[in-house]
Length: 285
Image 1 (cartoon, rainbow, N blue to C red):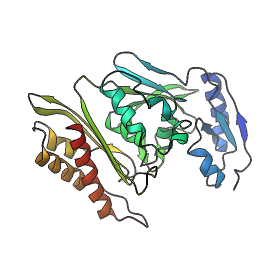
Image 2 (cartoon, helix red, strand yellow; image 1 turned 90 degrees about the vertical axis):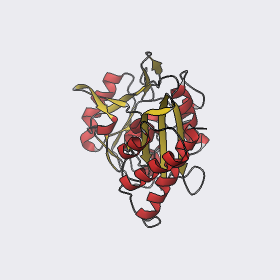
Image 3 (cartoon, one colour; image 1 turned 30 degrees about the vertical axis):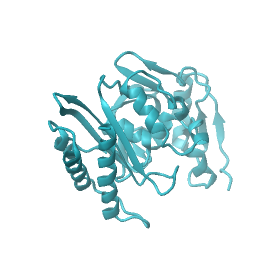
């Protein structure tokens, strides 16, 4: 299959990009960055945008910056940028760990961090990172700039709070304090496949007890989110097998797992139980 006919626009500035997007959005105009999600569905004609706003030549959107409090990731930053830590400390190591699980190497060299969030696949590793770490998404349109918290950004399967004329210009991740431990685990049928369930956890130790626990789950529900019940099971406890199993059980009981023609909700809950426990064990290794 080949995509349906479309007009490609190549703006040079962010202002030009959002102006064009405002004009073409009513005609199902779409933003093109890496294209690793959009182009395949266009090839199968599951999407037929009449216009593509190609932002690859917009100055500054390929930048990663660090102000000492947050890591800012521009709309054209590729997955491959994170193969090595982009910032010192736990966050850089976390991103370098997670990126190895994203699809295959050629896709990581073209696909983008922000594009993954805008596409909002429930199995997306970067969406899980954003939800778990309480990222902030910065959307830009001709009306100005809008900041959207991760908990308000994802609204369903491949659905976000972005308006049709808004461009996700950058994402801000809070830098993790020194001493933050993290673990990531996902389950897929084959390497590179979409994860059927995944978990990212972070926490610190204070006096040997867990504090500031974040437990995120993706792939099991229509969008990734933090699981407060699992975080409560960890808070104030010494890390160990019994505590980790209790948190994993709390996560499995909290999710409203999706079903499809291959996977039952019960099976996905079992996967949540497994990936959360394994992520916690990895954080404690």
